[in-house]
Length: 438
Image 1 (tube, rainbow, N blue to C red):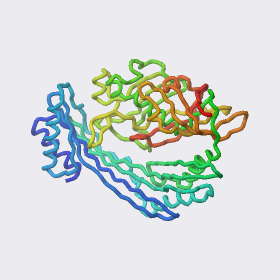
Image 2 (image 1 turned 90 degrees about the vertical axis):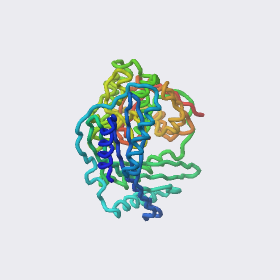
Image 3 (image 1 turned 60 degrees about the horizontal axis):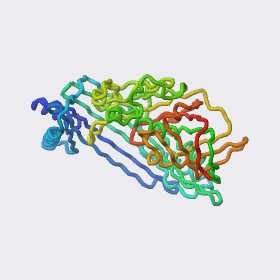
């Protein structure tokens, strides 16, 4: 049985039983090709999919899922969800009403290249990395692609589907110069295979990792900091915890009660845009069937909106923003899609530390208070001379840092975000940041 047929079977059965039912079916296909010694060596193709149901029984919610689409398995899954709902404490949950959402293909021909061409991308990446004599070892030179097909329907009228996917090249390597050894990786992802440039990604990997060779310890002190885009992306992922309607509903958001207030510098505008053309996490609707939109989260420093699904919106007296997240195996959550920090007029040169990497940010940061103290790497500019530095920690409070952003870069970098979604970010400059080193 297809996912579409399974969805319809469950909805028909749910209506027959008088249930309030939502059905989410999804299938994921993942392809990975590794190059070794300049040749395509390892091919790995995997697929996974199933159907998840969410039922509301007397205001109580229950979930269940199955990867077997036979009628007997679907009936068992529905029974299991009802039983799980009945075990929950009393509530006032309800499924959102909706309508026809259409059939959307966000991928089109984006992954239609021949397998040989995809293997060639991994080989080109490997050869580009191997050209630098400072490369001690290439841990991986990989082509990766993922495709997802989603079917969504409910007894309250929601009905739609979409297909999306991305292609990526990923490099991991170790570089040596004298006694200095550095390890790192570089990643480029696009919504279309033909937009990838493996040779350019290899050069960027060599530059990003190679520039740290010969690093000296940073002297403890306070300096101007410039956070590179990939570092800003990590900070936005930390900020998304406070932006989540689920965090707000649980009383854990540091931004509670601050809608309409200034929470960042005037040059900071943050948008979440699930409709972004070519965005790595774009989608036509969320996991509840709410149509996607461009949402302004922070506008010129003023806090405009949390991210909500219908449940967190109801619990906090706000409106859904179309940020429901769920796959067929999970319960309902909230997550950003394409989180975009709007670019600025650029960053002026000067003395300070260019922070190029934060290590263990999620272990060394408190998402509730915003306190961050983590190991970092970077480049220091002092008296007109720039040199690599490491073996230091950078410390700040994220919410205070946002208020002190002096400049925002003019160029942006798009990166996949940990746990899904993407970030589209420039660099930012902040004065008087604490660095602890030698």
